[in-house]
Image (cartoon, rainbow, N blue to C red; front, top):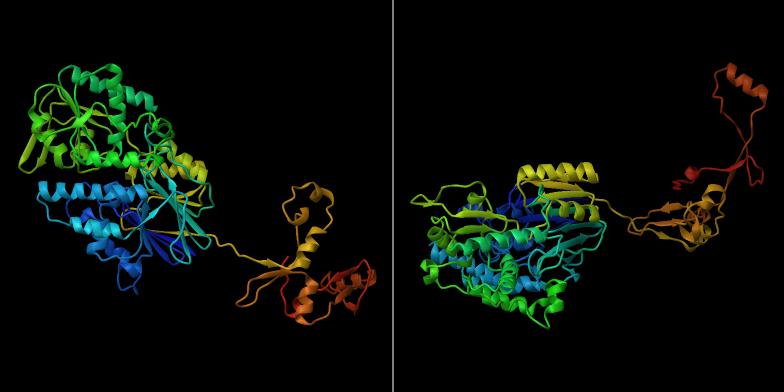
Length: 572
């Protein structure tokens, strides 16, 4: 039996995560994301390929056993309403409770940006989002869910963002883990990823920072605060493009605490009213945050920001310094792009990019160098004179974290997704050379077949077990670690396999009784010297012998005959 992995998204790229895994005849779609850098057919995964995996299936519901979403980021969930309401998938969809609560906010916020502000054709409506969410079955951490009689899934804490989960899936003896996005180090509001050590055939892991080993968190925080403080002290404006959920809360906690300690009066703004709703959920879902947040929650809720307030559109041209969190992240459109157009031409201002930016976005262009101009579209060119500050506050794990998790889980095979091709090739070599595991990094629409091991459950008779426990230990065997029944390190029996029955191991005399036969012994008599010389001179086989008799005997030269004459095979 093999595990077949069809990568529909995030193959040798970051964006539209979607992997369809066929395991034990079941097909699981892990994530259903959209690509933030495309606005054509490449935006969504090629779902038709998933349907082609099951030629006899009439629709997606018959072809896919279930969909599992790891977290609420759009590159992991952005295509879900399209898949369920437009493509017509009506099967089970699983995600954690926080993801179910926050996903509709993210989806509707993005839909508004694309349709209302950009004037793009609507891919799905607000009603589609609500109908999609009705199909969702919420998961709790470490809750074992029986999807059907064969398929089992379980969610583990992934860090990254509130509610993010790694997913364990098992059918029969075949088992795998799909990590989604995760973080192996804790931050100010989330803990580090946690997962049980299990026997795995396959690990599918993100590889966003496949070659990067980050500096200490405290050093990055100091550098960020220093850059922001320097800009506002000089009368400049700071634009921090971020999504409304995740890094926004992390950086708001950091700045709010710094403003309080430094007694700064310069305003910190957040552009999205969505954040008010998001912070309400963060307060409700304290159990999914870091231990530090849980411990301090009874005294002070860290999501009640003292120095952060709502930003009105009319404030864009206001004089004086300020800090603005504007959505969406990566400057992929919406209000963050509108503000960027206004503030980028001034040398006093600062744009700080706190995380990864997908290719095709303005943020990615800014990270790729220091452009003096940027073409927004064919009709709009912006002068870029502002300072550009890139600092990794990304909630993704780095190269060390990926290696640590892979070594800890010790799967037989590894597939890398959600990364850039050159970096993935580098990480593949490390995993294979340092950890000795077969590793792959398929491109979009490629399939990887992973062989699996199959365990055979065997019954044993009481007499066989009793015989094992009474086997005397001698010599070196007596000094070996007791691994078997009653301390014996080796047990001999006969494996009986009958059609439609569980295999069974039994003693030899039990088999004879079962077959209705008697036990026979064969006496081998040594050849006399004269006969051996005669055999040598006539080129007869040196080891030829004749059977003197077939009888019961206690002689030392007596050996047990093969059971081949009885029509049986003997396994030891």
